[in-house]
Length: 239
Image (cartoon, rainbow, N blue to C red; front, side, top):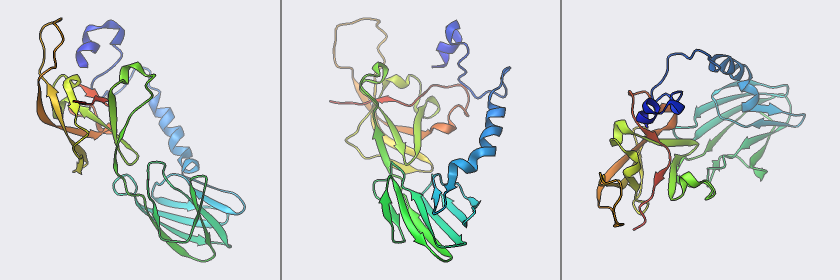
């Protein structure tokens, strides 16, 4: 909540909007280090096998093959691998842990989360890792998240911002009995908003709620629309 950053000196370092620069900026050298090594995260090889770990479009040069990767992994999960081997090899394509049913248009066997395929000539392989909306919860040993859930689509975590949903995001409740839908890069969910209670204390009674639509955006996009609240974990309406 932005107000906490402004009023609590212990939280003054937490910025509720994107910062142009920091006095002690660790990101530029870390970004340079990441970009220079990103290829090693995406793919690797040994004498018999080329491994494709992360799906970033580009051309990968190996000792035993050249692999061209194309597709939009985060948007629709459809990927194409064009393989030009220098000798008969095995290609191992990682099946994402979030993908319940991968469709790979080539004969393969699965081992340790990878689809292994034999390739002895120029070959194009298509794979479909269809991203679905999932509701996630963390360990119940995390006290702050008891009774709350997070929403993901494929590999992307989504969050809720004040710019879309109004102030006091803690008053929102997700209705998990209603389907969520993906539209224009956002996830739209049905839920409720509790009526704000101005009394600091009162006898317990079920808080009145009004139905509302909850809009979630990819987490990496937050804090780009001015100062506003953001949360990843949302309470669930249980009754």
